[in-house]
Image 1 (spheres, rainbow, N blue to C red):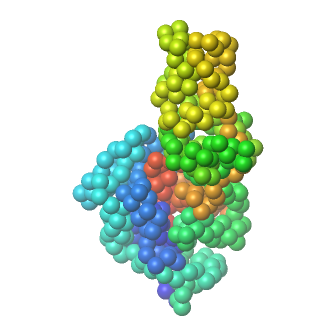
Image 2: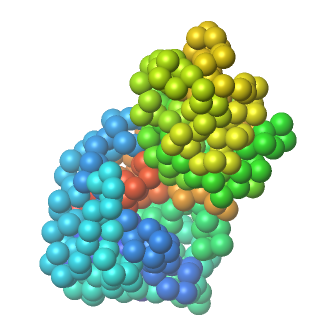
Image 3: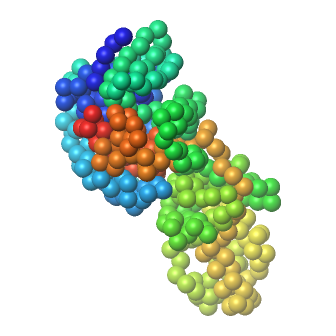
Length: 395
Protein backbone atom coordinates (compact mmCIF):
# COMPACT_ATOMS: atom_id res chain seq x y z
CA UNK A 1 0.00 0.00 0.00
CA UNK A 2 1.50 3.32 -1.12
CA UNK A 3 0.77 6.22 1.21
CA UNK A 4 0.27 9.84 0.18
CA UNK A 5 -1.07 13.06 1.62
CA UNK A 6 -3.52 13.43 -1.24
CA UNK A 7 -4.87 11.35 -4.10
CA UNK A 8 -6.34 13.32 -6.99
CA UNK A 9 -8.64 11.54 -9.41
CA UNK A 10 -8.59 13.04 -12.90
CA UNK A 11 -5.60 14.52 -14.73
CA UNK A 12 -7.47 17.22 -16.59
CA UNK A 13 -7.09 20.95 -16.10
CA UNK A 14 -8.37 21.02 -12.51
CA UNK A 15 -6.65 17.84 -11.41
CA UNK A 16 -3.26 18.80 -12.83
CA UNK A 17 -3.36 22.27 -11.32
CA UNK A 18 -4.54 21.03 -7.93
CA UNK A 19 -1.78 18.39 -7.87
CA UNK A 20 0.85 20.97 -8.76
CA UNK A 21 -0.42 23.39 -6.10
CA UNK A 22 -0.45 20.79 -3.33
CA UNK A 23 2.82 19.18 -4.42
CA UNK A 24 4.68 22.46 -4.39
CA UNK A 25 3.50 22.95 -0.81
CA UNK A 26 5.39 19.81 0.13
CA UNK A 27 2.44 17.41 0.04
CA UNK A 28 2.95 13.87 -1.29
CA UNK A 29 0.48 13.69 -4.17
CA UNK A 30 -0.70 10.87 -6.43
CA UNK A 31 -2.53 11.96 -9.59
CA UNK A 32 -4.55 9.23 -11.32
CA UNK A 33 -6.36 9.12 -14.66
CA UNK A 34 -7.86 6.24 -16.60
CA UNK A 35 -6.87 7.85 -19.92
CA UNK A 36 -3.55 6.94 -21.48
CA UNK A 37 -2.23 10.50 -21.12
CA UNK A 38 -2.99 13.60 -19.02
CA UNK A 39 -4.84 16.66 -20.28
CA UNK A 40 -6.63 15.08 -23.25
CA UNK A 41 -9.51 17.58 -23.18
CA UNK A 42 -7.04 20.45 -22.88
CA UNK A 43 -5.36 19.30 -26.08
CA UNK A 44 -8.55 19.57 -28.17
CA UNK A 45 -9.79 22.79 -26.59
CA UNK A 46 -9.93 26.05 -28.50
CA UNK A 47 -9.32 24.33 -31.81
CA UNK A 48 -6.06 22.93 -30.42
CA UNK A 49 -4.88 26.29 -29.07
CA UNK A 50 -6.59 26.17 -25.66
CA UNK A 51 -8.79 29.12 -24.70
CA UNK A 52 -7.15 29.04 -21.26
CA UNK A 53 -8.99 31.92 -19.55
CA UNK A 54 -11.16 34.99 -20.08
CA UNK A 55 -10.25 38.51 -19.03
CA UNK A 56 -13.88 39.26 -18.18
CA UNK A 57 -14.23 36.47 -15.64
CA UNK A 58 -16.83 37.32 -13.00
CA UNK A 59 -19.25 35.23 -10.92
CA UNK A 60 -22.22 36.33 -13.04
CA UNK A 61 -20.70 34.50 -16.02
CA UNK A 62 -21.37 31.17 -14.28
CA UNK A 63 -24.49 29.06 -13.80
CA UNK A 64 -24.98 27.27 -10.47
CA UNK A 65 -27.78 26.43 -8.08
CA UNK A 66 -25.98 28.79 -5.70
CA UNK A 67 -24.85 31.77 -7.80
CA UNK A 68 -22.61 33.01 -4.98
CA UNK A 69 -20.59 29.82 -4.54
CA UNK A 70 -17.91 30.57 -7.13
CA UNK A 71 -17.13 34.05 -5.82
CA UNK A 72 -14.56 33.02 -3.23
CA UNK A 73 -12.36 30.84 -5.43
CA UNK A 74 -12.59 33.15 -8.44
CA UNK A 75 -11.61 36.18 -6.38
CA UNK A 76 -8.56 34.43 -4.94
CA UNK A 77 -7.18 33.13 -8.24
CA UNK A 78 -7.82 35.43 -11.19
CA UNK A 79 -7.11 35.41 -14.93
CA UNK A 80 -4.16 37.71 -14.22
CA UNK A 81 -2.72 35.08 -11.86
CA UNK A 82 -2.89 32.34 -14.48
CA UNK A 83 -1.60 34.70 -17.16
CA UNK A 84 1.45 35.36 -14.99
CA UNK A 85 2.13 31.62 -14.94
CA UNK A 86 1.72 31.41 -18.72
CA UNK A 87 4.19 34.24 -19.22
CA UNK A 88 6.67 32.69 -16.78
CA UNK A 89 6.84 29.78 -19.21
CA UNK A 90 7.23 32.13 -22.20
CA UNK A 91 4.04 30.82 -23.79
CA UNK A 92 2.92 33.33 -26.44
CA UNK A 93 -0.76 34.20 -26.32
CA UNK A 94 -3.33 36.49 -27.88
CA UNK A 95 -6.78 37.83 -27.15
CA UNK A 96 -9.24 36.70 -29.79
CA UNK A 97 -12.61 38.33 -29.03
CA UNK A 98 -14.66 39.11 -25.94
CA UNK A 99 -11.70 38.65 -23.58
CA UNK A 100 -10.88 35.12 -24.76
CA UNK A 101 -7.18 34.26 -24.42
CA UNK A 102 -5.55 31.58 -26.59
CA UNK A 103 -2.08 30.19 -27.07
CA UNK A 104 -0.39 31.44 -30.24
CA UNK A 105 1.03 27.96 -30.66
CA UNK A 106 -0.54 24.81 -29.29
CA UNK A 107 -2.56 23.55 -26.33
CA UNK A 108 0.31 21.10 -25.86
CA UNK A 109 2.18 24.00 -24.27
CA UNK A 110 -0.44 24.26 -21.51
CA UNK A 111 -0.27 20.54 -20.76
CA UNK A 112 3.54 20.62 -20.76
CA UNK A 113 3.47 23.59 -18.38
CA UNK A 114 1.09 21.86 -15.98
CA UNK A 115 3.15 18.67 -16.01
CA UNK A 116 6.29 20.69 -15.31
CA UNK A 117 4.49 22.36 -12.41
CA UNK A 118 3.59 18.88 -11.12
CA UNK A 119 7.20 17.78 -11.51
CA UNK A 120 8.30 20.74 -9.39
CA UNK A 121 6.08 19.38 -6.65
CA UNK A 122 7.29 15.77 -7.08
CA UNK A 123 3.75 14.68 -7.98
CA UNK A 124 3.39 11.03 -8.95
CA UNK A 125 1.35 10.93 -12.17
CA UNK A 126 -0.17 7.58 -13.14
CA UNK A 127 -2.29 7.22 -16.28
CA UNK A 128 -3.87 4.30 -18.05
CA UNK A 129 -5.61 2.48 -15.18
CA UNK A 130 -9.19 2.92 -14.07
CA UNK A 131 -10.17 3.18 -10.43
CA UNK A 132 -11.30 -0.18 -9.13
CA UNK A 133 -12.78 1.08 -5.89
CA UNK A 134 -12.63 3.79 -3.24
CA UNK A 135 -13.06 3.21 0.50
CA UNK A 136 -12.77 5.35 3.61
CA UNK A 137 -11.66 4.08 7.02
CA UNK A 138 -9.69 5.39 9.98
CA UNK A 139 -9.34 8.86 8.51
CA UNK A 140 -7.86 7.73 5.20
CA UNK A 141 -9.15 7.12 1.67
CA UNK A 142 -8.03 3.95 -0.06
CA UNK A 143 -8.05 3.84 -3.84
CA UNK A 144 -7.49 0.69 -5.92
CA UNK A 145 -6.21 1.23 -9.45
CA UNK A 146 -4.84 -1.33 -11.87
CA UNK A 147 -2.87 -3.80 -9.78
CA UNK A 148 -2.02 -1.22 -7.12
CA UNK A 149 -3.56 0.48 -4.10
CA UNK A 150 -2.84 3.77 -2.39
CA UNK A 151 -4.17 5.64 0.62
CA UNK A 152 -4.27 9.28 1.65
CA UNK A 153 -5.93 11.59 4.14
CA UNK A 154 -7.29 13.69 1.25
CA UNK A 155 -9.12 12.61 -1.89
CA UNK A 156 -9.92 15.07 -4.68
CA UNK A 157 -12.64 14.40 -7.26
CA UNK A 158 -11.49 16.09 -10.48
CA UNK A 159 -12.86 13.69 -13.08
CA UNK A 160 -15.19 16.20 -14.75
CA UNK A 161 -18.58 15.38 -16.21
CA UNK A 162 -19.87 13.12 -19.01
CA UNK A 163 -19.49 15.67 -21.85
CA UNK A 164 -17.51 14.40 -24.86
CA UNK A 165 -17.60 10.68 -23.97
CA UNK A 166 -15.36 9.83 -26.94
CA UNK A 167 -12.58 11.46 -24.91
CA UNK A 168 -13.23 9.02 -22.08
CA UNK A 169 -15.57 11.27 -20.07
CA UNK A 170 -17.89 9.46 -17.66
CA UNK A 171 -20.25 10.14 -14.75
CA UNK A 172 -17.73 8.63 -12.31
CA UNK A 173 -17.55 11.85 -10.25
CA UNK A 174 -21.26 11.68 -9.44
CA UNK A 175 -21.19 7.99 -8.52
CA UNK A 176 -18.29 8.64 -6.15
CA UNK A 177 -19.97 11.70 -4.65
CA UNK A 178 -23.16 9.73 -3.98
CA UNK A 179 -21.08 6.94 -2.41
CA UNK A 180 -20.04 9.44 0.24
CA UNK A 181 -23.52 10.88 0.68
CA UNK A 182 -23.15 14.04 -1.41
CA UNK A 183 -26.12 15.29 -3.40
CA UNK A 184 -25.83 15.75 -7.16
CA UNK A 185 -27.70 18.36 -9.19
CA UNK A 186 -29.10 16.62 -12.29
CA UNK A 187 -26.34 16.81 -14.95
CA UNK A 188 -27.27 18.03 -18.43
CA UNK A 189 -25.41 18.98 -21.60
CA UNK A 190 -24.28 22.63 -21.78
CA UNK A 191 -22.57 24.70 -24.47
CA UNK A 192 -24.22 22.34 -26.93
CA UNK A 193 -25.95 22.66 -30.35
CA UNK A 194 -29.75 22.67 -30.24
CA UNK A 195 -31.95 20.57 -32.52
CA UNK A 196 -35.10 21.74 -34.34
CA UNK A 197 -38.28 19.73 -35.01
CA UNK A 198 -39.48 18.69 -38.44
CA UNK A 199 -41.69 21.72 -38.98
CA UNK A 200 -38.53 23.85 -38.97
CA UNK A 201 -37.10 21.91 -41.92
CA UNK A 202 -36.85 25.15 -43.91
CA UNK A 203 -34.17 26.34 -41.50
CA UNK A 204 -32.44 22.99 -41.26
CA UNK A 205 -32.08 23.18 -45.05
CA UNK A 206 -29.81 26.20 -44.47
CA UNK A 207 -27.04 23.92 -43.16
CA UNK A 208 -23.72 25.77 -43.25
CA UNK A 209 -25.19 29.30 -43.25
CA UNK A 210 -23.90 31.57 -40.49
CA UNK A 211 -24.92 35.06 -39.37
CA UNK A 212 -24.52 37.28 -36.32
CA UNK A 213 -27.61 37.48 -34.12
CA UNK A 214 -28.65 38.47 -30.62
CA UNK A 215 -30.15 35.41 -28.96
CA UNK A 216 -32.33 35.18 -25.87
CA UNK A 217 -34.15 32.40 -24.07
CA UNK A 218 -37.53 32.40 -22.33
CA UNK A 219 -39.47 32.00 -20.11
CA UNK A 220 -36.25 32.11 -18.09
CA UNK A 221 -35.25 35.23 -20.06
CA UNK A 222 -35.17 37.28 -16.88
CA UNK A 223 -32.29 35.13 -15.67
CA UNK A 224 -30.64 34.39 -18.99
CA UNK A 225 -28.55 37.14 -20.57
CA UNK A 226 -28.68 37.99 -24.25
CA UNK A 227 -25.71 36.88 -26.35
CA UNK A 228 -24.56 38.62 -29.52
CA UNK A 229 -22.39 36.28 -31.55
CA UNK A 230 -22.58 34.14 -34.67
CA UNK A 231 -25.27 31.50 -35.11
CA UNK A 232 -24.79 28.56 -37.46
CA UNK A 233 -27.62 26.64 -39.09
CA UNK A 234 -26.93 22.89 -39.19
CA UNK A 235 -28.66 19.87 -40.71
CA UNK A 236 -30.04 19.15 -37.22
CA UNK A 237 -30.80 22.66 -35.99
CA UNK A 238 -28.80 25.53 -34.54
CA UNK A 239 -25.20 25.90 -33.43
CA UNK A 240 -22.46 28.54 -33.35
CA UNK A 241 -21.18 30.56 -30.36
CA UNK A 242 -24.45 32.40 -29.62
CA UNK A 243 -26.46 29.17 -29.60
CA UNK A 244 -23.90 27.31 -27.48
CA UNK A 245 -24.07 30.16 -24.97
CA UNK A 246 -27.86 30.21 -24.70
CA UNK A 247 -28.05 26.40 -24.60
CA UNK A 248 -26.74 26.44 -21.03
CA UNK A 249 -29.88 28.36 -20.02
CA UNK A 250 -32.33 26.53 -22.27
CA UNK A 251 -34.81 24.06 -20.81
CA UNK A 252 -37.06 21.77 -22.82
CA UNK A 253 -40.14 23.71 -23.90
CA UNK A 254 -38.39 27.09 -23.79
CA UNK A 255 -38.52 29.37 -26.82
CA UNK A 256 -35.22 30.69 -28.15
CA UNK A 257 -35.57 34.07 -29.88
CA UNK A 258 -33.15 35.35 -32.49
CA UNK A 259 -32.77 39.01 -33.36
CA UNK A 260 -31.70 39.12 -36.99
CA UNK A 261 -29.87 42.20 -38.36
CA UNK A 262 -29.34 43.46 -34.79
CA UNK A 263 -27.80 46.79 -35.82
CA UNK A 264 -30.99 48.03 -37.49
CA UNK A 265 -32.81 50.83 -35.63
CA UNK A 266 -36.53 50.70 -34.89
CA UNK A 267 -38.52 51.63 -37.98
CA UNK A 268 -35.78 50.76 -40.44
CA UNK A 269 -38.07 48.99 -42.93
CA UNK A 270 -40.39 52.01 -43.02
CA UNK A 271 -37.36 54.22 -43.63
CA UNK A 272 -36.34 52.05 -46.59
CA UNK A 273 -39.92 52.32 -47.93
CA UNK A 274 -39.68 56.12 -47.91
CA UNK A 275 -36.19 56.25 -49.42
CA UNK A 276 -36.37 53.42 -51.98
CA UNK A 277 -40.05 52.51 -52.60
CA UNK A 278 -39.27 50.53 -55.78
CA UNK A 279 -36.92 48.19 -53.93
CA UNK A 280 -38.25 44.67 -53.45
CA UNK A 281 -39.08 43.67 -49.88
CA UNK A 282 -36.69 40.73 -50.25
CA UNK A 283 -33.80 43.06 -51.13
CA UNK A 284 -34.67 45.50 -48.36
CA UNK A 285 -34.96 42.86 -45.69
CA UNK A 286 -32.03 40.79 -46.88
CA UNK A 287 -29.40 43.52 -46.95
CA UNK A 288 -26.81 42.33 -44.45
CA UNK A 289 -28.07 38.74 -44.31
CA UNK A 290 -26.74 35.68 -46.17
CA UNK A 291 -28.80 35.22 -49.32
CA UNK A 292 -30.16 31.76 -48.45
CA UNK A 293 -31.21 32.91 -44.98
CA UNK A 294 -32.90 36.03 -46.36
CA UNK A 295 -34.87 33.88 -48.80
CA UNK A 296 -35.98 31.53 -45.99
CA UNK A 297 -37.05 34.37 -43.71
CA UNK A 298 -38.90 36.05 -46.56
CA UNK A 299 -40.73 32.81 -47.33
CA UNK A 300 -41.79 32.43 -43.68
CA UNK A 301 -42.97 36.04 -43.49
CA UNK A 302 -45.06 35.52 -46.62
CA UNK A 303 -44.36 39.03 -47.92
CA UNK A 304 -43.24 39.89 -51.45
CA UNK A 305 -43.32 42.70 -53.98
CA UNK A 306 -42.03 46.26 -53.91
CA UNK A 307 -41.63 47.67 -50.44
CA UNK A 308 -43.46 50.85 -51.45
CA UNK A 309 -46.63 48.82 -51.99
CA UNK A 310 -46.61 47.42 -48.45
CA UNK A 311 -48.42 49.03 -45.54
CA UNK A 312 -46.51 50.45 -42.59
CA UNK A 313 -48.43 47.98 -40.40
CA UNK A 314 -47.14 45.01 -42.42
CA UNK A 315 -43.60 46.36 -42.33
CA UNK A 316 -43.83 46.96 -38.58
CA UNK A 317 -45.01 43.39 -38.03
CA UNK A 318 -42.15 42.03 -40.20
CA UNK A 319 -39.66 44.14 -38.31
CA UNK A 320 -40.96 42.91 -34.96
CA UNK A 321 -40.76 39.31 -36.11
CA UNK A 322 -37.17 39.74 -37.33
CA UNK A 323 -36.27 41.30 -33.97
CA UNK A 324 -37.62 38.33 -31.97
CA UNK A 325 -37.80 35.36 -34.31
CA UNK A 326 -38.95 32.35 -32.27
CA UNK A 327 -37.48 28.88 -32.39
CA UNK A 328 -38.68 26.07 -30.12
CA UNK A 329 -35.90 23.46 -30.08
CA UNK A 330 -36.96 19.88 -29.44
CA UNK A 331 -33.68 18.95 -27.78
CA UNK A 332 -29.92 19.23 -27.99
CA UNK A 333 -27.17 17.14 -29.52
CA UNK A 334 -26.46 15.75 -26.06
CA UNK A 335 -23.31 15.00 -24.11
CA UNK A 336 -21.59 13.75 -27.28
CA UNK A 337 -21.41 17.31 -28.62
CA UNK A 338 -21.57 19.28 -25.35
CA UNK A 339 -18.43 21.20 -24.47
CA UNK A 340 -19.22 20.99 -20.75
CA UNK A 341 -21.73 19.56 -18.30
CA UNK A 342 -24.13 21.73 -16.32
CA UNK A 343 -25.16 20.45 -12.91
CA UNK A 344 -22.96 18.11 -10.91
CA UNK A 345 -21.93 17.81 -7.28
CA UNK A 346 -24.17 20.13 -5.29
CA UNK A 347 -22.30 23.20 -4.06
CA UNK A 348 -24.37 23.08 -0.86
CA UNK A 349 -22.26 20.05 0.05
CA UNK A 350 -18.94 21.91 -0.31
CA UNK A 351 -17.00 24.72 1.33
CA UNK A 352 -16.69 27.60 -1.14
CA UNK A 353 -13.30 28.46 0.38
CA UNK A 354 -11.64 25.03 0.29
CA UNK A 355 -13.92 22.87 -1.95
CA UNK A 356 -13.98 20.29 0.86
CA UNK A 357 -17.13 18.26 1.47
CA UNK A 358 -18.86 19.32 4.66
CA UNK A 359 -19.96 15.76 5.53
CA UNK A 360 -16.74 13.96 4.57
CA UNK A 361 -13.52 15.44 5.95
CA UNK A 362 -10.66 15.18 3.46
CA UNK A 363 -12.94 14.76 0.43
CA UNK A 364 -12.78 17.57 -2.15
CA UNK A 365 -14.49 18.22 -5.51
CA UNK A 366 -13.25 20.69 -8.13
CA UNK A 367 -13.67 21.77 -11.74
CA UNK A 368 -16.43 20.51 -14.00
CA UNK A 369 -17.47 17.83 -11.50
CA UNK A 370 -19.04 20.61 -9.42
CA UNK A 371 -22.33 22.37 -10.16
CA UNK A 372 -20.60 25.48 -11.55
CA UNK A 373 -20.74 26.03 -15.31
CA UNK A 374 -19.13 28.94 -17.12
CA UNK A 375 -19.97 30.69 -20.36
CA UNK A 376 -18.21 29.79 -23.57
CA UNK A 377 -14.82 31.43 -24.00
CA UNK A 378 -12.35 30.33 -21.33
CA UNK A 379 -14.57 30.72 -18.30
CA UNK A 380 -14.64 27.01 -17.50
CA UNK A 381 -10.86 26.80 -17.59
CA UNK A 382 -10.67 29.72 -15.15
CA UNK A 383 -13.06 27.88 -12.82
CA UNK A 384 -10.83 24.81 -13.11
CA UNK A 385 -7.73 26.81 -12.13
CA UNK A 386 -9.49 28.71 -9.33
CA UNK A 387 -11.26 25.75 -7.72
CA UNK A 388 -8.11 23.62 -8.05
CA UNK A 389 -6.04 26.30 -6.40
CA UNK A 390 -8.50 26.57 -3.52
CA UNK A 391 -8.38 22.83 -2.87
CA UNK A 392 -4.63 22.55 -3.43
CA UNK A 393 -3.96 25.17 -0.78
CA UNK A 394 -6.34 23.50 1.68
CA UNK A 395 -5.11 19.91 1.46
